[in-house]
Length: 179
Image 1 (tube, rainbow, N blue to C red):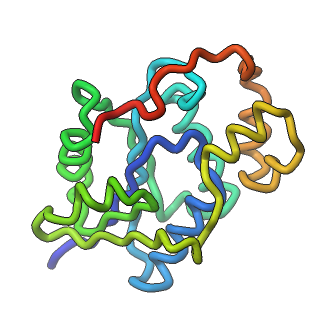
Image 2 (cartoon, helix red, strand yellow; image 1 turned 90 degrees about the vertical axis):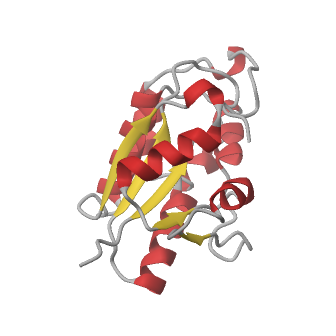
């Protein structure tokens, strides 16, 4: 019997309610298939990647608990080989043995479209969620209260307790990988 598993890869800087909406969308369409949230194991703090890998993992786990998804989802941190997202994706697929890939990223969908036996679920038309991680980061940098509505309560509390100096983060690359 074939084991159905979905992989949801990304930077998740941070994981927000829009990410959870894609998981819910997938389950509505395909049933309650286990989801592996594959996060980049980020080791530097920059303007566009403000959270270390272990912080991303904690934010995702808190969000999954708040949304009561913890039993149906698991988180895996995986290093990006030489900054190459294509190799990272292949590594994630091998680790998870997934036959579904969830993404809200057109580039990720394009990378995965030719992987044999992998169904790519990419609801990027904005009907699932218009929330973007860059919006959450911008609202957090500006210390605006609207950010609280875009992540779960315990994820918000965790992000606040990190006491990141948002105004003085180095620029770094827009993405921590190469397409």
